[in-house]
Amino acid sequence: MKQELKGEYFKEKYDFVCCKCGYKQWAKPSMMITEFGINSGHGSCLNCKEFLHLEIKGGIDECKYLEFEVV
Image (cartoon, rainbow, N blue to C red; front, top):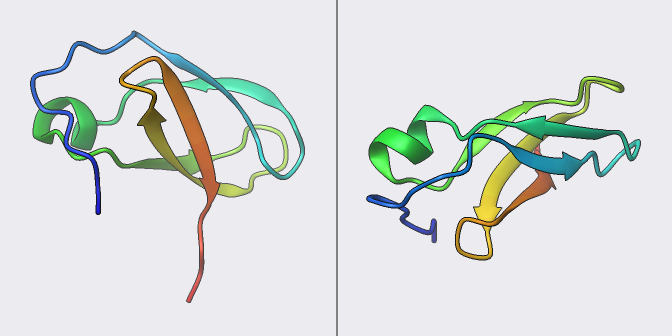
């Protein structure tokens, strides 16, 4: 179940490390998070191009990455 974050205050950007290549990068909160309160975002690693699913965890202090599962 997705964590709802509606009404929270968010950092301008969140640091994370790619799970595939270890490249350090950052992401801004997605529109799904800031506008709708649904803790879900995605993007590709700037180094290896791995497609990642991103969520904010630990309240709003940290960004977590997950490999995007293709079914």
